[in-house]
View 1 (cartoon, each protein chain N blue to C red):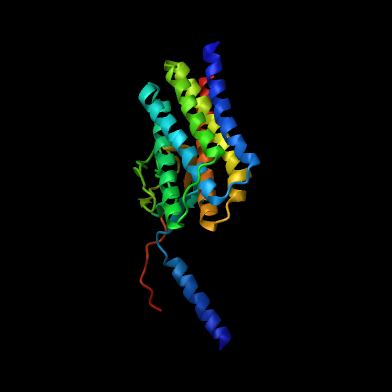
View 2: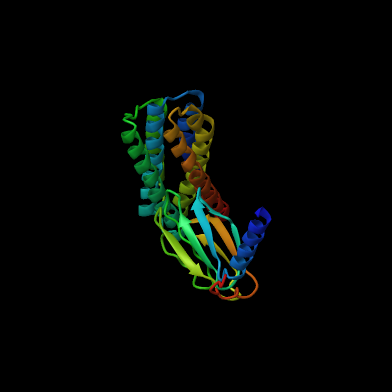
Length: 116
Length: 173
């Protein structure tokens, strides 16, 4: 019975992984740093930067229209990644704060309705 | 010679004021006064720089110092009100305020690139000294957990400001 439940659980997990579609990533801005510093994602994925610091920050890159504008403490900003859009970014208010987004591979399979 | 001497004096004033904090073991009310004094010194220096500099990068840095240190002071004041602590002036907070005023007087006498260099040199010394005081005196001495947490939260900002100022200092050489 337990084995059957385990197999069913694994099956559901596998289906969920296949059907995940575009993934959401989160970058926390806190302690004058972007964490994680490097995000590896696929085209179509979304990255949300969340400012949990006590200071205003921004997310700015010279390429790809990455320009969040000022993010007050508690605010966040989302960006959907395009194909081949790897970029380095920084907070222009605190230029020692830097990060990178590595966009690799192809768009994930579209989300499908599970029949199980 | 005077131009060479000014930044050195400013740095010494800033360093001397906070180095006394290393020897002392301030209580929370005294720490609160030191935090407010230290931030106010850099806010005032930043406002002076905003009004005097013609260098775009120095102006942006000065504006950031005013904004960030004002933010810290706002949080510090909110915390002491919440904790019903009255900031207690002490030798360190007083000498910080006096040293800040003396440093501004020195800066006021300068202009152009001499001002920019002296201001940035002062910012490097100031943030290095504040960072040392946070690590060696303020965080270890703070007894209230929320005050300790605020100091811990502020530390990366001081380190980032220091790194930013050092970068500008290196570019000016």
